[in-house]
Length: 218
Image (cartoon, rainbow, N blue to C red; front, side, top):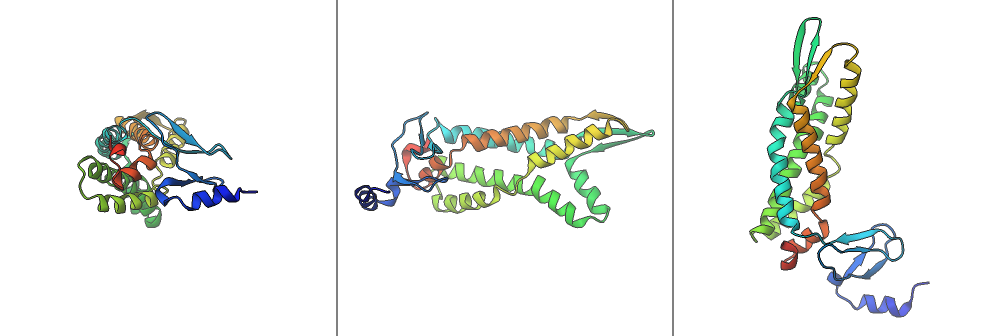
């Protein structure tokens, strides 16, 4: 049974001093953390949030690296296929065009959105949010853009496209001469950078920084 005194004490605190567990919905007073520390739910052990050192600077570096990898990952050859004397260079963009020209317009549009458009839009949203924090400008727009980014997170499916590409390469090895291109290395680098960015860009610190907490902008 919940403690009535503790519940009454929590209800008297301002909202910015409270935090709720995403797993078991336990409401508790937000702990004060230093760099490198993390808060866990006392009931279920779920990580509530963590404070990472220089989160904005590190996230900015990763966003810029991902944007630099984006163009070669999507437009340089992922593999070269040599079948019956005919050679073709396949890229992510040529795959979208191939689906479109084959009459599979819906699938082509879905692949374009999930593997090219939405990942780029996510990176641009992250860049705008981080710059608004770093330069201390347009925080209200930063809040709006970060909300948009949270809705886009589930639609960027580079890892699914990556698995599909690897399966296709393995199956083609018995049918044709396949050589891997620099585009595949860039695509893997882009995927790893985005995963690294997701773990580095602490949502709790970003929300606090957008709300005006100077301590969260380092």
